[in-house]
Length: 407
Image: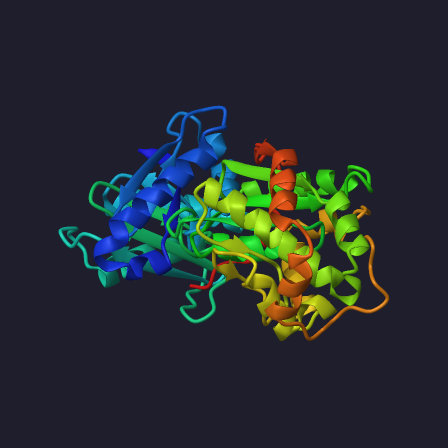
């Protein structure tokens, strides 16, 4: 037996105790979804402490399996491997072939790391490690370096087979998407909100999105950007919905009603009212925003408190303590920065007052909002909202860093 495969190893999932089975089942479901668009069927099987991906008749798919697995939230390490018979000689043969492939024309210091998941194997881990090391040294003349090897050969003995590998990559880690419920993320065209959504996906939240456009006062550019961002983020969770809500006329009504310095805070409260209604009507249990404390005038502590009082659902702000450079760096790693840089007509830039109130209270906004018929405004916006299904697209690059995982 000589079968290329990919091992997916858990991180945080290993700490889940009696609940781990539920998290593993969600991870398996998400893995099957991520691999469903490949041209040939892929087997996803559970092993002790890991998942095994394989396409037995199509070894050429291994590279694509690795790429897809590295977009799978809930996986700590992605390890391409060779599956061989459960004998020391089969392990030696696989280790030699992989070592030559890793350094085809050079001498390299190497180490062997062996592990038995089942103790009925006739050699202990130390004995197997020494046996493989001796055979590789004799065949290739490579020196052994257990501290900082150039080639590290991992050998894992399972119940019915042995896995041999010389590569391992860092996964996205976190909890499987869907294990913590569903939220609705307010998606602007900027850098912050896509990063906020991704950070909560890594905590197990499945996210749908709502984007407020400036229509009819602006064109469709921001809607196109929002769809592109939602499509990029859908790679990490599969089925996704995006609501587009035309806010322009309501913004004008707020300005004509004399919002003045309260304009930005008032329209953010209106956005949360609409988002809260959409979320509660479609099974979401929280709202997500990309707020960063003090980054702009509407994100002072008092303004954040005033805004969130407009919603019944909890408002999650995973980037609250992040700086702009940190957010932009993460957006670059996700592949959302290139979309966020595209020009558009942001609804938040419409009808800006000369100055923005930085210290507001709910009482101030309640008094202003009582002069308007906000319930009718919310209903009108909901009636105009358009819901779009979003697909990730099979051929998109992962844009996930190609860092080697730590041993």
